[in-house]
Amino acid sequence: MAPSNDIVLFHYPSSPYARRIVWYLAIRNIPYTQCLQPMTLPRPDTAALNINYRRIPLLSIGRDIYVDSRLILQKLETLYPSTSFTNSSGKTITIGPPLSASTPETKAIQALLSHFFIDSVFAKASALIPPDLPVMKDAKFVADRQEFSGRAWSQESVRKNRPAALVHIREAFRLVEETILSDGRKWVLGEEGPSMCDVEGVWVFHWLVGFGKGGMESVITKEQFPKTWAWVGRFDEEIKRLKKVVKVGKVVLAEVEEGIAKGGFVDEDVKEVDKKDPLGLKVGEEVEMWPVDSGFKQKDRGRLVGLTGKEAVIEKKTGKGEAIRIHAPRWGFRLQKVNDAKL
Image (cartoon, rainbow, N blue to C red; front, top):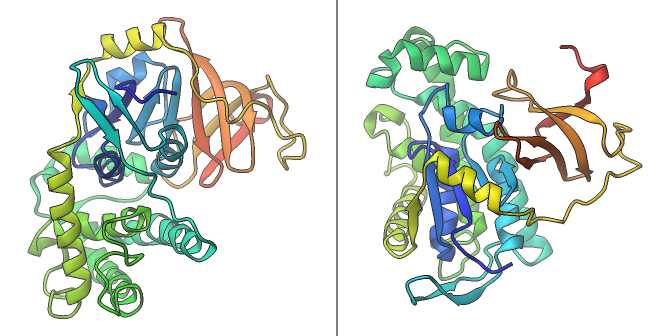
């Protein structure tokens, strides 16, 4: 597939998960367009596309819609190899090489960092949002995040949970400081620039540092963890530099719908349903698919068209009747045949 501006990223700039994708695209100089979304529900754009999944980011390429930042990163690595091409303005764009680790040892580091920060650290970090931020005084935002997470988000509950969260995040800083960065390396794999391992490891710390003193107070300081703080600062400066280079456009819903109507399915990696999958599902069956850790009240229903140990793909139609396919990772998501679902 020839790289182009067919990539549409649905996000809002303050989303820590969306930043992972924005950073990745900047590091590799992959041009894309963005369809900016509100921080809270409702999101009329995704609703018009008949996408119930409520988490950010989402990414579309043609009629293929990818959810969950883990899968999005994996797909971008596969679908956009290193290459050069001429854009519509006659400018030559050079896409950098894929960022994923290449040896068994570095692949293990990348996978462990991904699981550690997504499945363990971020839940604690989210408890460190400063309770005095204006958004924490917004009743709509608080109610939205309570529905999203299934836990209390009041200023009182945030203040109550902060001490325990600080303990966990301090240990995450200590782990990075005393192991990965202990020898003074600038990047996780010791290379000249950031790799996927840096993207997988730095995002939670970067998000917390962005809150200033209100995020981690005096408990997690530059004096305590100088290497880790320097890594976060170095990554931030590198991303600021790279974001000035990558081409980013903006689109609205009508343009997204037009792109879907004219586009095709570009991803044929998952073409069939694994007959040995433990769920026993069959191609063509109507299923529901949803994340299990947050945003679990919103479920997408469609026809199962692909299923492997790593990925599930369902097909459904937009509000205008165009067929789209939603791709989700198996890790952290659940699939269920509609006849068996508790509706």
